[in-house]
Length: 480
Image 1 (cartoon, rainbow, N blue to C red):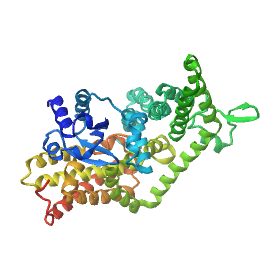
Image 2: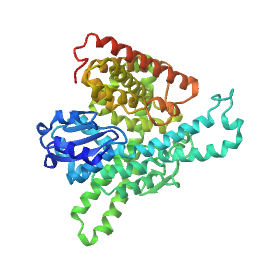
Image 3: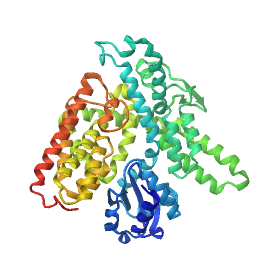
Image 4: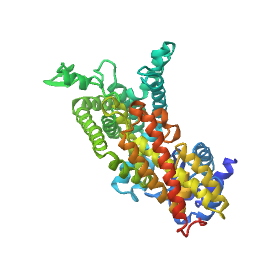
């Protein structure tokens, strides 16, 4: 594929470089803020082989290209348009805020912070899943793990365990870097603040609840009559997000009032010191508690809701993806998995898999249903397989929403599949690919793998059958 030519054609179809206010991309889509969306030539875009679909939401025009290709097209688009990635607050946000409500702004904020660190989290998650295969008792042998029977693999399991836990244990460093940059501050100061919050001389955050429960003394600093707990924030999301926001605001405020000759000396020093002090004094303890409440509350709702709760979530997951709000789940999932010893893992990942598989099944059904539109058939086959492997946007936006009835079939299949796995409390202990390869991320205890597989089969079959049934009543069979 000629990526430069594709980028040039896209640029022409969206009204030229003068119509681009800002641009960035995610795993599958170009995300463009355009000065005038009425200039977009939808017909020209739909004819391009590289384009799988388009839609506009929250003031952002999105062009679906696909995983592994979008970044190459984007790199060429940067060159031909003469614009760089502008996903941070200072350049893009004023234009976006004109079109976004508060919920959309929050989702966009979380997306900007967490999407860049997903590769690190997913890598750690998949390694965690691999460690689970090696150490889970009863998976290959009765009541014994693989390394208990074959102890020559014990060293490998120990090494993988350290590799897997590092991104989660030191999560505040990743979040600190990304969040500080997003809030308009110095990303390296954000990383330094994250390092402070996970310093090895502090009590480990995972040991803190156990110490409280056992009534043990918590180490603290005595400072002007204040007792400030020396407790770290390993694996914590909310404390680092709030701390990074405070850091960026303090840094930007100081740069406005600090003389240029003293800026490099004082701004970084005061920003880090003041933010870290405030974080350990009250920001951290308060947000840590709120984080516990959120994790425990969601886990309680999932456990109580059972199949009904799973059904509702499964039905709503794809519509949530349309709005982009699913990006906010990354923060929640990360916290649930980081606290998996108490939460059991994330219930969101398995339900996302049911939705992705159902979208893939509906797209593949559309492949057999549609007769006249050759391009749509080609997109349906490739996008359907892609969705089964965890990348769902080409199938959802390029096929199912265009024809409408496959999308209805997909959400029905997703809901029933999600109800099944929710009944059996299937949870993920790691982040990974929400599709067929997701087995490695699922907890193998209590038949988790078996029920995960059955759930995918249910979601696929129901979505495929319902899509085929609805096609006989649809006027959109050969359109789009």
